[in-house]
Image (cartoon, rainbow, N blue to C red):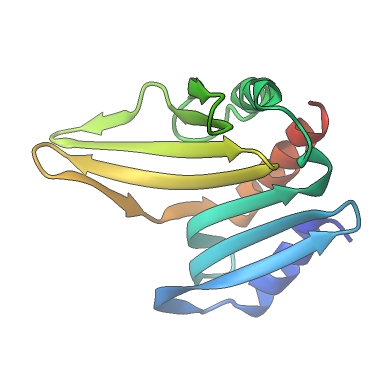
Length: 163
């Protein structure tokens, strides 16, 4: 059973779940890929989550430069979110690449954007933020359909394995 199948099976059993503090759901596939989702609410068709984390065991010994290729592959492949993604910064000393919405969604005095951090050893973190003019930024839940997760998770895994 794939990561996506496992996750959707768990989410199906959580229909009706809603809590102020997210519940972490973790699934692993035989290829040593682990997905963790901090779930805030679930219904029959969608869910809200605070953070998605992906750990790819085969990527553990990869150099920081390969993270840039992973980030570029994600930006090319994941084109169906609310904003387009673009790689912003590679920091070879810390072994991280930052990817963000480019451009972010701007409405009135608010800006919303996705942020992905890739770091060695084979770790990906996806979050969403809202920034209000003059008040800084805050992390907000990502709201997505189960159908979008069926596309996003395999795309994130496949891009990590092409590096």
